[in-house]
Length: 107
Image (cartoon, rainbow, N blue to C red; front, side, top):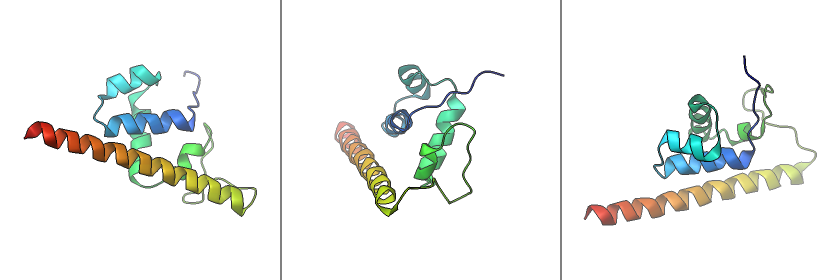
């Protein structure tokens, strides 16, 4: 069994962004140096289910379902949630722009 790799949250979100933009799985794996395609599938499932808290969890650490990580105080929890929501909005904006370009090409 190989060693486990912990990917930063930024890599996970970049991989999701690339997949939503229509980049092939093999290309995403190559560009971001991700070892296994099933890892990408897992991240996509988390994203689609709205389980953004799972991107923060370290390797081998599974939080109780729906609980998410512990926060020092309410402010840090809100900052994390705010950052995640901003990232979701940015991804959706980029997807909307790509969708617009695809629509223009098809006409």
